[in-house]
Length: 357
Image (cartoon, rainbow, N blue to C red; front, top):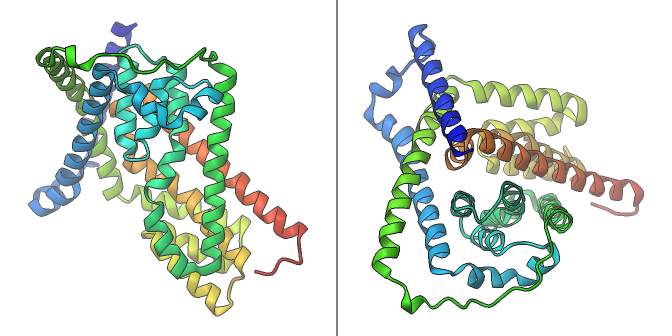
């Protein structure tokens, strides 16, 4: 099994290199824009890549340290009630807790547990989907202080809908895990004696495992990241955003609301909040229409941003096949939860005309 996975790894890498070589030969791959200005290479290639390497490295090391020192139960105890009800393992709970601090660290912990054979593929899938809940809170403080002053009541309703969607995802995954994972008879307290460990041996083993896995991950992260960088520079993501925005906007919302979606897609989402607040204040849109526009911008733009920024990480940390499957599942799961949560809100508005926004 490992040999088969190893072969697929090199087949995928060879395919990427072949595509890059063909694109360069036919003139579709232009690297002169990087070579002309070293500052561009540092800002758009080296600096983001070093950041990804740093967080992946920290995540790998933390995950291996937790397992080596027997600290999994201590970390998992923070969510013991959820563990019992959802039949979660200590490893899944540990990654879930870590995801409140860093999503990359949590992913690195999951793959470390998977490679060591203490998590199977089903548990990996559930753990990654489960972590969509804590990942919601990573940027929530900044979002709150930006959207509330700019979008007012529409922004508050939008935040409540996205929060409900995050809770909905958590509940669905817990119900799923409860039905597919065996019940845990008990959760034993941590009994390992860390004082008797051979620290030199532990650190030596950690170093060897850490360097091997990090090198394997970066061999995939680097070419995928550079490939996506060139796609971005060629305007692929701008074209994709415009196409999606125009199609969705022409069928689901007023023309005025579409400007919020387009602004959200073409710039940072903060600009979309500002546009929403301005239209709401001017009376161009009412509160439900503004909420719809904000949700549409989120639903359309987030998967595209995930493809740009998370695809190299997922394909690098996991295998190409598993990474692709996981990122598609998380984005589909997230979009469906937002659509359902938004639909419930607009159903409430329709059934309760006495509500005034």
